[in-house]
Length: 416
Image (cartoon, rainbow, N blue to C red):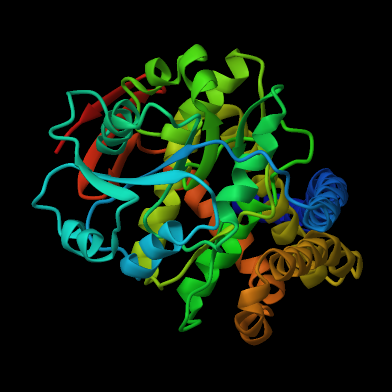
């Protein structure tokens, strides 16, 4: 009798549970679908509007003639090791169409491999500075920049900072400095664009991935400075205490941006002075570079990092639930997939169009590889999420042979 009752109970209850479970699953999937796809669609609309404004800003700025403001300037370039096309990069800075400037190439010691290349291309307007050993708790690049600022010639009214891995056009310096005539500005900045010659997957992905940061530049002077191309009046540098902001830091541009914010001075993005970076990378190099960028962002600009993480969690979550919804036979899933992916691909095409305006000399490369900004964008979204999550797990970065622990935006520990 006991066996009979048990069998009867099992036989009567199990089908009911089996019938209800798919209902619960479908209900949960529907809730997740609307909770993720709707915010993803709204974010996509906002993002595309921002992308359109970026393109329009680039287009309108490039139509305007370059101003006449061109005071004496010092261009500072820190070097360490031999970057891809280092000779051409330095020569592009030396061959500027600018009335009065000096180029200071600064490195840690005379033993650096870059010294020989620098000496072979420098002229009477340039010199090499050896900064020596950086103090504990300060990044090597920051130390080199501080030493170069102190050594800048007295007559220079503007300080310009550039990286050794980029190439610029002959009017780059004039275009970058001219807006500083507006005394409401603290600094001007530009941004890089990767143009890998070979066009393999990871080099192209780096270009696509990094172009999303370039497209975040605004037209209202509320920008972040990028260390590979920024200019500031010497008077502003001293009054805003940029050197103090740099003490104990690794990121020169993030701390300069913080100094401008505290001084209530704007930072203007100058589309007419972009920087082209050539050369490739493999998968390991790409992720080391990308994670380092996001670790620095998490420490120095946590608000931007949190916003990026939240956005990519929503985007990627919307893609997953849309695929599951479509797999369950609900055609709504395909619509969710479209609104989660297609707008980003369209924005990638807008970025490619902006690159054509800023880099007319790279038109042939863009004709050959410009498709990547459209087709790689869905993959880049997932890579963004992976990189952001990885950057949440560490405060250590390796940069030009040095290992740092970023304790805070004002404290750094050099581990090796």
